Length: 639
Image 1 (cartoon, rainbow, N blue to C red):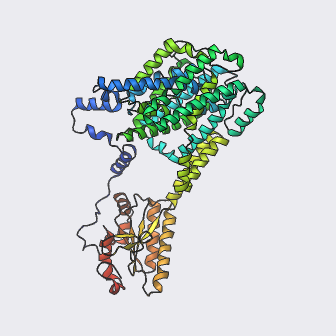
Image 2 (tube, rainbow, N blue to C red):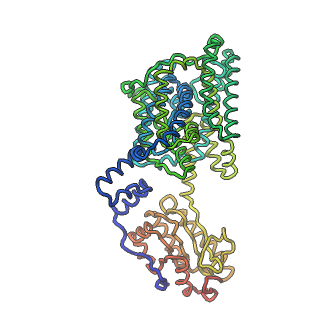
Image 3 (tube, one colour):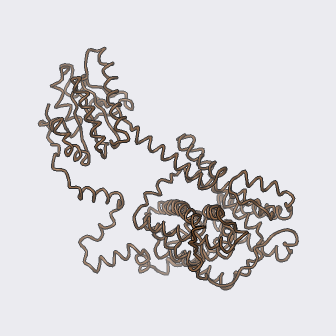
């Protein structure tokens, strides 16, 4: 049995050196987009220019910028600024920090992102999920009510750690880590967070003064009902009116997409109307709490406020790690989603660096964690933004607000901010996506529900970890128990396909063709060995009744991307076991990484080069005349 009759020969050349193979593997792992291709063959001056444009994207689009583009970016920037003001105040409240910090966070970070970000449509700002995550984690070591200064300093420190981690991941091109946050996990996490945040806003809706610091549904509901004596019907009525108004504007946007601006300006209208109402109606006298004093002026430096005390440092580190990953997953996913709509691409590693730098700079300038929120990015996209200049326009609008308009927002009712947050969160509870997961993939649905209920009833970080853990278990099951299948010949063709998927495919007497579809290594080597032997045993049981024994096993290895020493040993055990029964083992289409390992471990010498083929058809043609049952086999492989 030889492969000499094939027109194409199997490549048995000397395996690549360790350095060459490692370089190739690292390149595919960390540089799948091959960013260095554009620098080859270019003179030094041009390479320098391209490198600057690659690492600092503003140098790529700014020289080509024009007034016609600025008209669109100006409108989009003003529109998202009108959304950033109420959101900044609202989410700062959610993080239990002074409202002015929320406005600061929409001034400096967008400027940094405009320089280093690769997305044209992403609008930078604070997000509810990370705001709540920071609050819940920092309050494990210090309560905001007991020591507000220390609490704020730890928030800045958490933002610094988040930025450092994001930057490091981007520089090391470890964007692959964000992929562990699956779509199902993010859907469940956002839904659970939104539910929790909505319930927490009942504090503002009912005008409560005392509340729990815990972030689970049971504690929140207990706090709401145990403080019934603090409920104020005036606050509830105003909150419901604002909430109904905000939801109505969303309904208008859905029915008339061209009227998207109605929903975009609704939060600002709520803040302005609420402030006027609170001022003229003396709302504080009726139990409706207001934001309070907002100092005029731009971001003060906060480098000296960073706190690395051993007593407290664990909380900022924990908050920084968790929020960094959540912010990256949300920001990159949203940026990619809107880029796809325009048939464009963004670089995930560049986005990591941009997010990291804007949070590092933000932690030095009295800002807390920022990323690319969905609501603001959607408004930016619908407003017709063309480049990251929209973020610059938004930052300038925030500068003017901080210098001249900030004191005007002191009368903003807290109940109006609660209504804005609740309205935004209701859109994040994606019932339809959860139902779609239930109908299409029950395991993905379980991953989603674990995240949802874990966040809602335990804690945000625990819910996230449980969901990621379950997703990893699923991935490990795929790895440890890879699919194998028996191939059969498709009549009137040279194709061999899975007989379970194609019932018309016919088997070959005396020959068993198996396809392996995953890497073979220590985690699944034993399973693959036992599965191959079981295939042979089952086939023997079938063929014995027809008088045809299995004489040859073909292993199609085209889907095996790699193999380790344990995997080679498993194949060697299979070969010994089958040869002891008089069954020949043949390999088909081993890939370069697999072939190199089989050559280095002398496995090829053990089975002989004549037992390795390019295709199933070649192996069949070379093998069929040596089979005892060959008299029953026609030229195309049909019995």
